[in-house]
Length: 347
Image (cartoon, rainbow, N blue to C red; front, side, top):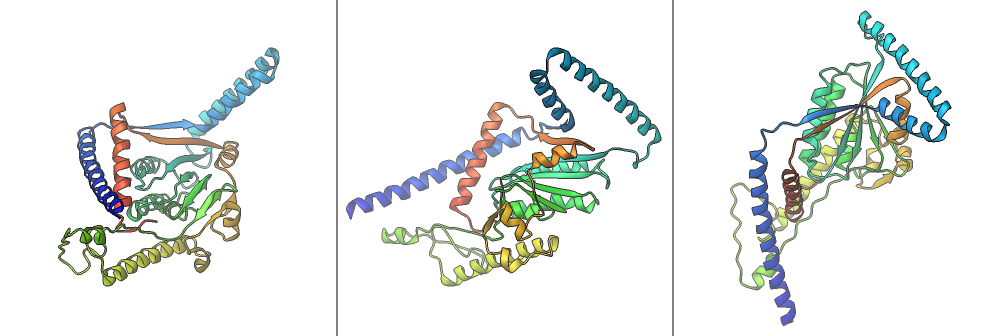
């Protein structure tokens, strides 16, 4: 028993030290990031049609003999020249009907904090300055979900595209669960790979509590609040049944908001069937109408290149190697602290 006691004391001390170190690191990182906040980034735009053509040329160079390859390149050059003349005529006519359709492609790689939402909002602001109803926006979403407010903002950013009357397609190659599906639900169409993970319309929260351990060793913790429900559950203080019930009510309310948002965007869903917190693979998800089509983003965009100009857009921050390292540390600190003290739940 003595060994167990010593181990628990050591564990409590270790957790305290780790949290203290993480808080200090977080403060250092925040100061560093604020110091460099004036450094702007830049928007990178790459034409996917050109990339596909370059890949095709690389394969041709290997498969064809030199004479045939040279002939094929000449034919491509001739076609490009003709296309350039056609574009020049279209510009002179200045008619939207004559302009070739454009597809703008954005990427969202989600983490617990949805930290890339800042990039997403800048990319969307940029494309909305020139995108029109005849164009299309494709967002490749990959996310297992995370904090409610951050993914709510990410979904709101996608809503801006639809509010401008521009068709929106979300593709999911690996996973769009919980907060990731909250974002996907905004789209006019959702495409998923056969084994992409879809769904998890639910909310989760977990909070460790060491009050009994501290009390056993005569350690008092006072939690002082103003407002009956300012803090429902705590890490160190004694949790009450009233506080626990209130916390569950808050989770249920978040879940209800989640369902209402998804229903508003995809009214045909059987919410009682899909809002259980479960996930489904792409093929099963289409049976539940969580997605509209089984397809990888590569397949969809390759087809789009046949009759449209497809542009990939990425916001890139100008960061020194040290800044990138500090940003990773800050992200790790935030995620760790959130896991230890998750009082609001996550999607």
